[in-house]
Image (cartoon, rainbow, N blue to C red; front, top):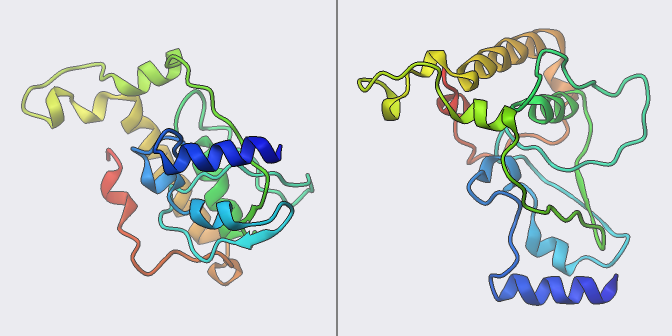
Length: 178
C-alpha cells in the first residue's frame, strides 16, 4: 500500500489524481487532501469544520442503534448520503481523516436515476437553462431535503454538533431547486 500512496502523491502533484467530483466542492471540499498526504498510516486528523451542509465524506463507522439511518424518502439518486452525513454531524459524530486509508472511485456511466436527476420532465425556455425546475427529479428531491433539514433542526439539539460549519461557509440552500 505504501507504493500506491507514493504513486498517488506523485499523481496528485502532477494533477493526474484529484478529489472525487471536483465540480462538487461542497460535497468533498472539507476533506483536507494536503493533510492526508502528510499523515502517517493510522494517524487521525480531525476535520475542524465542514465547508458545506452538502459534505458527504466516505465514512467507516461501527453500527449502533444511535447511528442515523439513510432516510427512506431519498430513493435513487440525490441527497441520501448528504442527509445521513448531515444528521451524523448534527448528532455529534466527529469526522476524522485516516492516514494511509483511501477509497478509489472508478468512473462509470450515469445510472438511470442520475439521468432522471439531470433531466427535466417539462421544458420552458423562460426558466433556468431551459428546464422548468419545479418539474425535475432534482427539484422533488431538493424539496424532500428541505423538509428533512427542517425536521432535523427541530428534533436534534444543535449543541451536540462537534464538527461545526466553517466561518466562510456559503448558504447551501441557494443551490437547492425549490
